[in-house]
Image 1: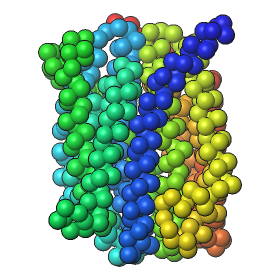
Image 2 (image 1 turned 120 degrees about the vertical axis):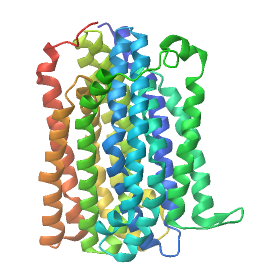
Image 3 (image 1 turned 45 degrees about the horizontal axis):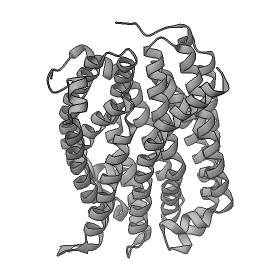
Image 4 (image 1 turned 135 degrees about the horizontal axis):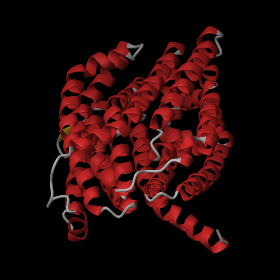
Length: 452
């Protein structure tokens, strides 16, 4: 490629990535604001510890199914690369039906088991009660969340990441408003503490469904993709979506449950250490969410290139996007390592918890430097059908490396929170190495996606 051609490709990457990053960054802001609100409640230590359990438990349940977005995204991107726009619409229709049916079933099961889940992962009974209150209301919004996930995957696949950005800005603004009202009380509504955060998130997600349905009704999309005109459920497409998504689903659940176990390990060290770990995880969203934005961009570009039969361009997009993401994570990692108190003061005023969290955030800041390349190349591999490899690599790195090291150093060797968090950089570095090796030397480079 000439210098101008490379520059044009970088521009294409950023045009897709920046709106996705902006949208995901609003989710990061909500996470920080929610943590800041909960951190200002009267029983902040218990509430923050419960929030750590509640948030991770929510995502551990819904992430098994929310990865339907990955299957939708990849199939739409491949069809879009082949200029088969009717097939893009067929994928959306099928994904929507899957999401609706699964969402109803998962929501029902989640509401029934909310308090059992929270108590299982909480060393303290009061922490478990607070987490259960949050989960009970949060699980009610799962059907609406999964529907938006389906719509999101469609727009990612056709390269319209700005739609997601507008959606995220709207829904997360509403999330902050609703959460404030229901956490502290306003307009005659009694404050409900952590449970109010669950209610606020569910209401905001319902508004997100309305937004996406409105956009999908626009003539520019209806006339091109014919999803409403030719509405049908395709068993073949449903099978393809599940085949792509299932390894991602298992990966999400294993990793989120892994972090739930990690939070439980920190709870064995102490309730304050568990609360501090929640602060660190919330702070890490500053770097993790934008990495996911680069992952969304690369999944669209690699998927479209692979669908069009241009594997060399798919390789180019994978490595060039990972370079950009790594520059970002280096900058943020340095900020976390050298100015941890500045970050932590954003989410709580409790100086005791902040001082407990400082060494953990420094360790995590170093580890996340290597996270950008891992996430980007993982998304690239998913786009070319290697989601099973990505799942196995992540599970091995997390469950066989990270968790045993964290328990061994934090509990067995009595090194406290520093020891527990010391396993994170090892986990991230190992995972990223496995992604680089597979993407660079994998057999997928010599295969093609079958043309229609």
